[in-house]
Structures are given as C-alpha cells and as structure tokens.
Amino acid sequence: MREFKGVDFYGLDGLLTEEELMVRDTVRSFVTERLLGLLPECWERGVFPKQLIPDFGELGLMGANLQGYGCAGMNNVAYGLALQELERGDSGVRSFCSVQGALVMFPIHTFGSEEQKKKYLPKLAKAELIGCFGLTEPDFGSNPGGMKTRAVKKGDAWVLNGTKMWITNGSMADIAVVWAKVDDVVHGFIVEKGTKGFAAQEVKGKLSLRISDTSELLLTDCEVPESNRLPGTDGLKSALMCLNAARYGIAWGAVGAAMSCYDEALSYAKNRVQFTKPIAGYQLVQAKLVQMLSEITKAQLLCLQLGRLKDAGKASFVQVSMAKRNNVSEALKIARVARDILGGNGIINEYQSMRHMCNLETVYTYEGTHDIHTLIIGEHITGIPAYF
Image 1: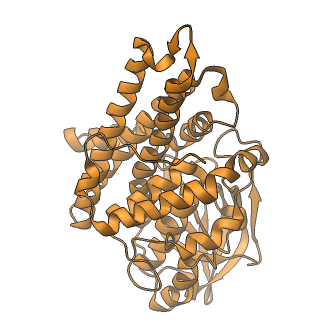
Image 2 (image 1 turned 45 degrees about the vertical axis):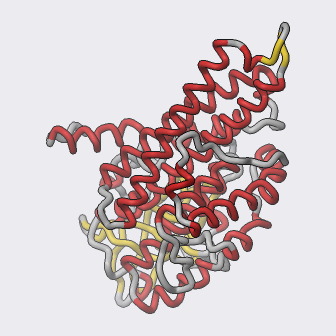
C-alpha cells in the first residue's frame, strides 16, 4: 500500500503533543499495513475483518479515552486522532471501535456499579468481549424517547420486551447495553449473549457500511438480573450522553474518510493524463481539489478545538453536534467529488473513494441525522425548539 503522509495544510501537527502524534502515527501505520489490503474483499463479501479485533485491544483502542479498568486513558485529542485514522480505512472499522468505547464501555464506566465495571471493562478494553448498544428501534430513531421496549420488575430480576434496530456489532456482541422504559423512565441494562429470550439477527442487503456488523436485537420475555441494571442511569438523558460521546468520535472519523478521498483524488489527478497533460493541470480539477483541501482544513480545526475543550471539561453537546454535522456533510461532498475526479475507475474497489462515499451516506444519518443536529444547534442559538 502507498504510504499515507497525511493532510496538514495549516501545520496543525505543530499543535499536537508527542503522545498525540505517536498515537496517530501508530494507528496510521496499522491501517496502512494491516487493514487497507483486507477491505476490498471484506466489502465485497460484506464481512467484518474479525482477525484484527485482538489488535484493536492491544493498541488500546477500546475505550481509549476512559480512565482505569485496563483502559488506555488517552486524552480526547489522541483518541480522536486514532478514530480519524481508523475511518481513513473504513467507517465500519471506526464504528466498531466507537460503539465498543463510547456506547458500551462509557455507559458502564459512567453509570455502572463498581462490580459491573470490574467484571466487564477490563475484558472489553482488551477486546476479549465485544459489546453493542441497543437504543434505536424500528419506529423510533430520531425520537428515542418514543421507544416501545419495556422492562418490568419480577422479583430480583427485570423482564425486557422489545426490538432494537440498526445495531452495530449486534450479532458478534457478547453483551448489549439495552435501553428500556420502566413505566415512563428510561433505564439501561446489560444483557449478556445467551440470555433466554435475547436474539440478534444480522441485517442483510446493505449498500453502505458493508463491513460493519449491523443487526436487529429481539427481546422476548428476556429476564435480566437486577445486578445487570445500570444503577446510575437517570432517564433518557443518560442514553443521550452516550450518543454525544460517540458523535465526538464520528466528527474526527469523518475527517479521516475525507483525507483518504482527497489523497487518492490528488494522486490520481497528478498521474492520469488526458489530452496533453495530467488532469491535475486543468482548472476545473484544481478548483475541486482546492475546495476539498479547504473543507478538510476547517474540519480539522473544528475537531482539534473541540478536543481541547473536551479535555478541559468545557465542551457542550451543541458543539459536538456542530462538528458532527459539518464534518460528515463535508466529507460526503468530498467523497463524491473524489469519485468524480477518478472517473470510471472510481466505481471499482481498487480505489477507496466510492466505498467511503457509500459509508458516509449512512454516517450522515446515524447518531443524529444532519437535520436533527441542525435543529439542536438552532434551538441553542434561538432558544426555540423546532422539532415538532
């Protein structure tokens, strides 16, 4: 694979610490040397490269920005840079790590009992256990508060009934963090694989995120012990805190996908000769490349400042929404333009841009659609909610 040297038009590497650069460069090399060669076949077959899962644990990528319990304890900028490089490979790989860390380990770390933390987090950090996050339902995505999944107390246990949809890591997961209503209040539960009444069915026929394990979770009189309820959860806002943690990583990941597409388009344009010279020598192609680089640079600045704010404990969920909304939207545009520059070659899996383009169509929608993030920011600046 051709070495990837990065995209840094504004010299942002100079604002990174040695540790942050080391994390970024380590994951960058791993993606180039171990992941990229597997992706064409994995994409065509629609399978996740499970042989790499132990490596994710060894690299400290599982719950990398969490403290203790075997987690790497990276700062949020280093964590974001790691996810950026993973998504430079494929959104499905970044999704795998995002879900494990932000949507499974984070809620256990934040809302779990000490016993739950000691039982699950060290194994999740080593990727010896895989987790998934059950919030979205077939009829409730953008409105998670409308969920139909219910939990009813039965002695020292809880009985869960409901269906969850579009669940990343669902069929390979050893545990699921499932959200259900007790009366009208949302609670979190840890449901282990093999629990009677719990099943996962993989979603087939996807044209996006093909290497990601996407599943439907079925809970039918699924009995979970009280010891598996997350005691610190406090209604729907607890689940939304998890989503906010995941959206932070998505904002960084989108930059990685955009960088991959720009790098590929630039290299191709400099080597593809049409008429009398490389197509990079034509004004229209140069205009496209300049626009791509400009948007990548702005997205990098958004992420870096957001990461610094997050490390200082000052980042707001609205700022996370802005970064996710902007960066994914611009990355999708960049992927489309890159595919255009590649011409007919852009539709074969020897090149990456169309795979990124298809993936980003989903990333644009999940963890809060583009329009929902627009309304989150709109309510913040006007003080008037416009969701209904």
